[in-house]
Image 1: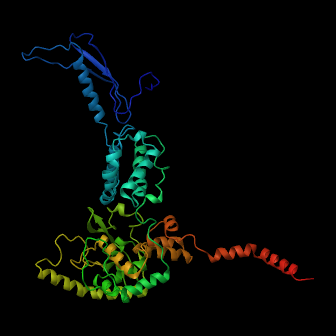
Image 2 (image 1 turned 90 degrees about the vertical axis):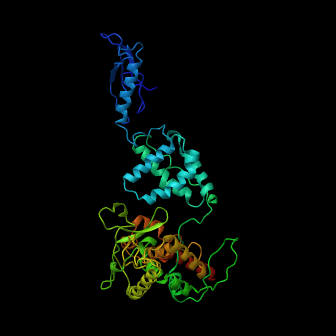
Image 3 (image 1 turned 90 degrees about the horizontal axis):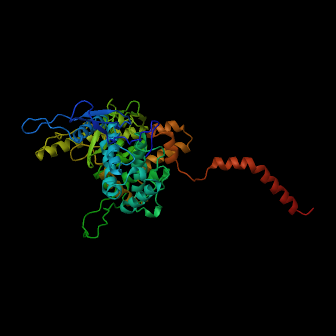
Length: 480
């Protein structure tokens, strides 16, 4: 055990040493117990307690013959003093378990304003996979090798991007938090951990695929006019073949009101939740500027809510990707949206009539969304479901013969990649998409492509030498 400069043993935070128990010098039958416990903040304090007075059933004073009563009084006082300094963070030590560190880290995330659904997205990996196997391991003996074992285990159990999410979104922040509160020394063991080999992944990796401008143009034309069949995607073998009329791509997009939304995403490059959260009042048709006020987010796993991020208490949403950012739309897109708003009045009127006929109020009582959503649900005029929109896109993409990696996010990448390739200021393109310049260059620019300007530069530098070589070879080949 380590000793400090005065020769006393160095205690761990929260430890209570055995007291020095001795008889009271003047009072018979009374003992004193004294010691220096250490609280969770690392502070020491001298605590001394004497034998408390006790009486028997007849009211006679009972002497403390061994000093045990004074010892118990000392431990009670020391524990009370230590508990007064305790917080969830300061309770963590290097001997705390991964399960305890995870609970403390969740509390810190809530205190710092992290959205509840973000924590709920992390919870299944920790609750169902990590805690049952590694939850009782002490954080002080969890090194990089153990972290890599966790990542491989999660990859085998859950597949997909689960190892990356565990390392970058959960464990890295959790161990950084443990270092910050003093439970661990500096040096995050997650930082050097490597992800499992790609063979351990069972789902598509690499994010949304890049698409060229001709592909985007063809998608925009097809959602309005394509006569290609758009059958359902049903891979469940237990289901029998159902006979139904297969709509065309244009009919499918008209039935589920997808065409205008696809054009809007292609024109703005916004994320799914942002595009579905736009209101009609956000659009200034005189200037062509759209100033969004909110986004559609997921609450409690499945509920879709419209969240306003222009209020002062929406600090967690002011993180670039959800900050209010006005953008200007091209005139053809504005004309399309103006026609859509005119059609929406008739659609809303029909939905109200249908709800009244079914005995329902025209607008649900628990409605928490604006009444003028640009892209609304066709059942109650509320927010659209994010997962449902993803499923409808997959059916549409399959009918158009697009690769599996082409998602609505591919349209967003198209805006970023074409803006950078055209030589636009990277800050302007980042403002359009709501990204930082670093993320834009790293994730929204197509890499490993031939570049004409680089070829021209190389030709400028070594072209004269190559011309001289060609001239000399030609001279040597011609007889003198």
